[in-house]
Image 1 (tube, rainbow, N blue to C red):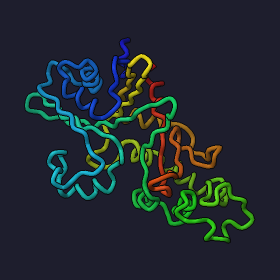
Image 2 (image 1 turned 30 degrees about the horizontal axis):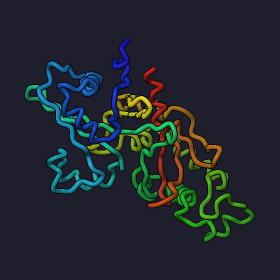
Image 3 (image 1 turned 120 degrees about the vertical axis):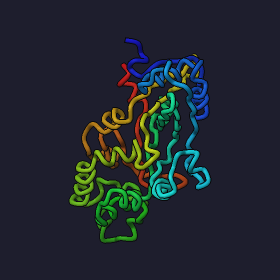
Image 4 (image 1 turned 135 degrees about the vertical axis):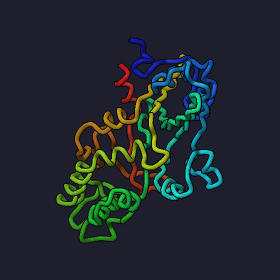
Length: 278
């Protein structure tokens, strides 16, 4: 079987950023990789009239709604829940039919393989998923949004590993189990929201690229987002050895650093997706 049939290949040169990917799609008539990607998306090259790829910015101006195919009534909700992610919108014309594919891009790096899939304040996730105030309180202690030292009844007789926050395994057992049970019972919804994204700009595909400077090659894998969600979402929901949360192959952790140190973030290892291309 040809590797492009399994959705992965290695190509000469570097194209690890969104502008490069757009250029390749827009040069689809000559670009070998772009033609492979279109085939993986189940398009017959000989029937395509035109392809236009545009980068979707993190923030979209109202004046650009038409450019990205967004209606005014959908704009506010879309901006509220759009993922802080690198995305490309691919507009494919076949005769008089226009098809739109949204692509989520992830860069894989063996030296720093974790990649942020989504991050928000706890209250944003509470609004999205409807967990109760007790779970929100526990997650705010976990991210450091609530200083545990401001609640002496909670930290009494506890020797916290980090005075600024509490790890999940430092929460009282009943609250810790309640958080685990919520994520386990709602895993399908949560995995969909952090990887695919809700709303009109949700991802249809994920493209992972891995650049090797030594031989100037880029290895890529392109997969349907449903396959990606099944892959990264498979596995237990449990506390990690470091006191964060495993949601299958997704790690739920405190962001830390700057900016937004007290936001909750979901991280994946994009290199793991290459296991599907073997």
